[in-house]
Amino acid sequence: MIRIYPSLLAANPEYLQEEVTMLEPYCAGFHLDVMDNSFVPNVALSIDTVNRIAQRGKPVWVHLMVEKPDLFYAQFFLPTDSLISFHIESQIDVLRFVKIIREKKHKASIAINPKTPLEHIIPFLDIVDQILIMSVEPGHSGQHFLEKSFEKIAALVTYRQKSNYSLRVGVDGGINQTNIKKLIETGAQDFAIGSGIFKDTYSVDALQSLIQETKKIIL
Image (cartoon, rainbow, N blue to C red; front, side):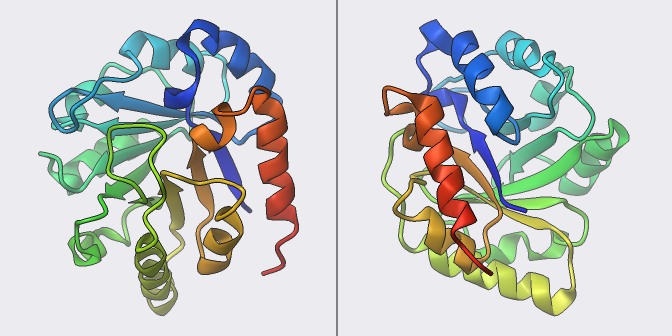
């Protein structure tokens, strides 16, 4: 099953709640970026905003672009089955943090930056629910998709198939109607989409157009 998550970093903050209300019936959940102005040179959604959106009840996808993800994670109150992405490049004991995430009945995801070799995450493929491939440099919305991401996705899918792992493959950055078909054909399943939805005047129409693109693909 293909899942699309509107990335609220790209939404107009003045109309955030209105956007959430309109998009919620059509999406798998919302992708919520949290930044610390250290791991990436930016800040994004606050802890309070994340918790407020999470209180609506649908599982959310929280992306921790921070140096110490465990400290931020401890402040969240999230629905069961929410997805937590943290970076392999951050200062974290991966095994310990995955255990903490699982104990709270959430799903664990490791994110990997464009310049980080895939080999850095291979030892952890059997303990996570998802690997998140960053297809832009993390920290800013509206960047162009990095074409080399296709190679990394394909290599990850090959590892998954050879080892018979059940983890999902997520992609974040520069996704739109032009490239989502090829991404799905390459093996990606979960999509965090910001500008590809919110750059249009009518975000619901943009989301539905993306959904229609996924329905055209026969794998």
